[in-house]
Image 1 (tube, rainbow, N blue to C red):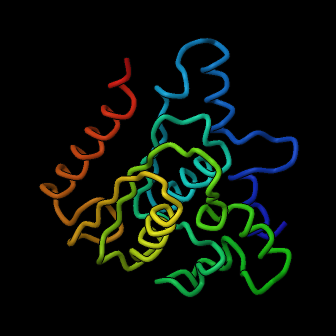
Image 2 (spheres, rainbow, N blue to C red):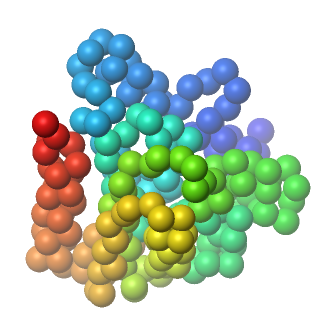
Image 3 (spheres, rainbow, N blue to C red):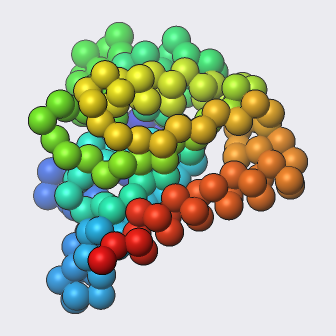
Length: 187
């Protein structure tokens, strides 16, 4: 099996629950937590994972931190260094790969009639791997659909949450503040 065709198992496949969704469901079934107290966080491909979870299983999450993410999977090859990931994710010009990319593309799976958790989306304008376009486009579409979200674009740094320890600490504090507000400040 080609490497890119294996990528589907990281997101979903018939008969196999997503790991994050399966863990969430197990926590709910055991009454350990509830959706309004469960959050998910990821950067880069992990940010894509959070976007996929948010669009495929919005009822499961009280919060989602989407960091320096890949979110427009149908245009991934045209954004920043996305062409270098064709071997990993596939190419939208190949019909069967395009179908897979469309199925996981958070940008293309946002819908006006769905209630999503209010995500915290962050990016940096100097990210030379993913670039800020994915996060900007996703936030713009959420705004167009009237969906609430938080957005932070860090002016320094690369493919992370800051250029130095001071910026990373500031971004981490902002993320923890968001998670506290979304997951702990309920009556």
